[in-house]
Image 1 (cartoon, rainbow, N blue to C red):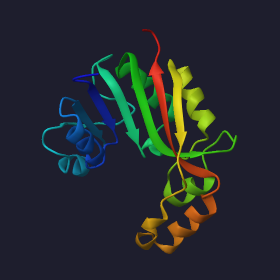
Image 2: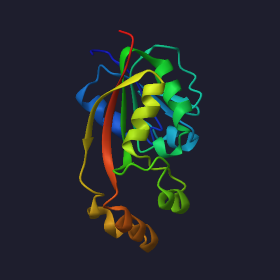
Image 3: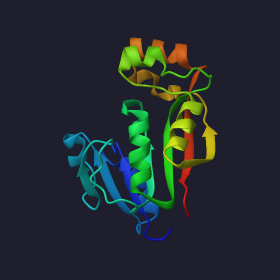
Image 4: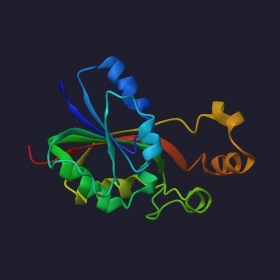
Length: 181
């Protein structure tokens, strides 16, 4: 909606939100990150919140959108989903863009966890955790495999891990809606 309130969880240096504001300057964006050094690099027009995604100092029911881009692998899933649901308005959207597994195993991908300390969950695990928090599945897009145009930037170990995972781990956009309109 016009003048929507967005919470960008694990915002990095704010580039995704900056691009959104280029198109929609009416948006109110709250940049939330545990890294103070990354928050310092966020554009000045955005509200910066130095906090953990599991305990957001944000008012209950104030956000139209909670957005998470490549951060979910650091989350304790059920705790984060409950916290996202808490800050969303009824009818608000949780938007996730991250790597997901395309097979049915329940746990995180062990190779990514071991090599990069990053959990990659199966899509049904994310959907179930969201449901337990009162967030209804709305839509999903599975995107093409990891962009190999980054290959020159990757070290040999990372390149090998990504190569082994390219058939089971894919970038995915998922959208959930807070129930209770």
